[in-house]
Amino acid sequence: MTAYSHADFGLARIGWTSELPHDRRLRVTRRALTTGADILNFVATFSLFMTSGPHLLLSAREIAAQIRCKAVSPVEVARVHLDRIERLNPNLNAFVDCRPEAVLAQARDAEKAILRGNKDELAPLHGVPLSIKSSIDVAAHLCEAGSRVRAGHIAAEDAPLVARLRAAGAVILGVTNAPELLMAWETDNLLYGRTNNPWDLTRTAGGSSGGEAAAIAAGLSAGGVGSDGGGSIREPAHFCGICGLKPTPGRIPSMGHFPKAGGPFALIGVVGPMARTVGDLRTLFEAMAGWDDGDPSYGDPCAAPVAVREIHDAAVRAINIGFFADDGRTPVTNETRSAVNRAASLLLSCGFRVEPFRPEGLERARQLWWEFFGTAGGMILGPILRGRESELSPLLREFRGWTDAEPAHSGESLLAAWLGRDEVREEILRQMRKYPVLICPVAAIPAFRHGERHWQVEGKTVNYLDAWSYCEWFNLLGFPAVVVPMGYSDEGLPIGVQIVGRPWQEEVVLAVAAKLEEQRGPCAAPQLAG
Image (cartoon, rainbow, N blue to C red; front, side, top):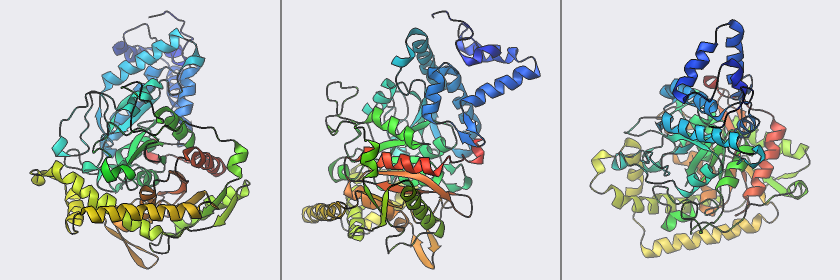
């Protein structure tokens, strides 16, 4: 390794040196802590790249900046995250496969690259620790999608999006928990059990990307990737107080995801970034998005050839924004209504044109979404599960009970659903000519207690499937949507709002979301993350 002075990294002043084998460095560091001042320096240095204030966690961009200027070493950043996983994961159950030696090997490579080259040539995620949902292929890691049917399945290679994140400099920590075959809005399975919400361990982190949301919110990971066919990025982000992007189908390659987003499901299922800030969503999106069929490792012939664009501030502020706090069918909590109204008010106060507006056709979109997600989804899973019914988790049995109670699609019924989807999509897009961006709730409620199935909201009963209808519309329609934390319930649970745009307008919704986040100010991390 190239020799360098102890001033090259901030941690060197307390005895850290990369000239020793990595399995000895921590012992050297401990040996150097011989005085109270040394210990205080050590704690302060480690806190530098994990926190930016009381109960605030650094963003992925901030961690990358600290690494780039050599304030911290990628190896020590990795070690801190591995330490947090060791300490906090037993209560959260977010990670299901984390291999510390593999993580440290990646971090050492990142460190060597810093020492060799110009910091301006480093990739934007250089040394940043990320996590991946366990339904997405990460080479040499489990990809079981929470199912005994897939128990022990090891991915042979990275999915294209994972390869792209590595090319952007990311250190992959491992994979996170999900409900069996992703068919639930909470995370629990027979392989690993349930994932708990870092804000309240008696409540769910959501699903199906609940492991990702819990890990990111608690600082076990700086960001990551989930998937979403009916709110599975956005509902967990809302429940755990982080940000998430459901992109337009095809904007980020979904190859290497299980179950495969094929047939009718390709219209509604996507993969997308999850992070603590909107800026981090943008960085992860830029790293993963786009069509590239030239390299079999990075490319996906099914991805859309849509380049990432820069959106000028003047163009963003010229957009009319419509908002609605409920859909007229499924009531929302008072705090949820307040969060939507606050978001509208904040954007109005910084120069946006924001007006009340709720598109017609949302209820029809909800009904059609179930024709794709429920009816067609059940048919797609049927052959996978045939003969293994006795091994299914309670959550998947529940889902199959719903789908088995309805007739399977015929050619005629599937065609009718497909045509209906195109009709309602055209109708809503026509209305959005005036309001290209919408603000609305993510769900009717904040994070619920494990096992709950209905809730009383504004004197009405809200059932399990109805609570997330605010997400389901936009899967059916193929619209991009970003979740931004915006408030808290009376119990101190986070509440997010959705920023929704027209197809292929991820850059627009991210720009609006960034303005909203800026006006809102910093969000605290859960106490568990401290």
